[in-house]
Image (spheres, rainbow, N blue to C red):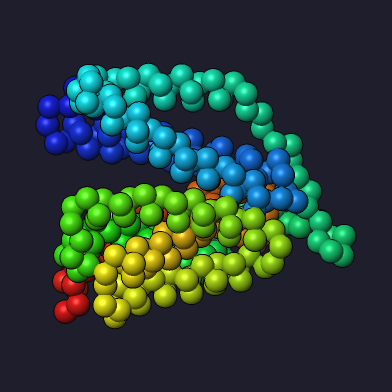
Length: 277
């Protein structure tokens, strides 16, 4: 990426290669954590995915300092070296979780579905569509939050930039709160709670007179649900299709993260962006 001199090279390096590494590291680490703690799947998902978010927030400040001192190309090189060292060090500490036999309240061992078996179930595709739509709305609103702040809420550039901080805090809060809550009540209910909160935020962006307070509250609702949804879903998938094939079963559903980001932008452009048409 540091030496990319055309758009295609940037797409291949920053998009394809970094995207593959990020997705593989995220998915394999998360699924392994969930297998280690089958009785506290929501809690461990909250900490694992919350740490993922904190890492991106921490690197934001590191990268800002590097950009100001050494420039873009060297920042990419240094960032890559730091990421490489941390990933290799973390990988040496990881161990595969033992095969789990999760029992129901009646003492019956739950079945572990293979990916092929899971994909033949209508519930699998229902979960996939739910995940895709949650990611589609969340990623789009988060991506254009600053533009909405300036265009619809009429905030200045400095105030609009605070949307990044609000989104980060709400996103992390959603991961922790909904993740931990999912160990206490049915996970499908937790997903429903999150979707209702997101609906309130979306409705406020669409119908409420926007000022600083209503705008930040609305995007906080959307970010809260988005963070909570991606935290609860691995555990929800494991409840439907078992723990031992979670990486494969959740991996296909997790494609909705990338597909949703693309579909959100396309659908928004077809319907006039974030303006009411």
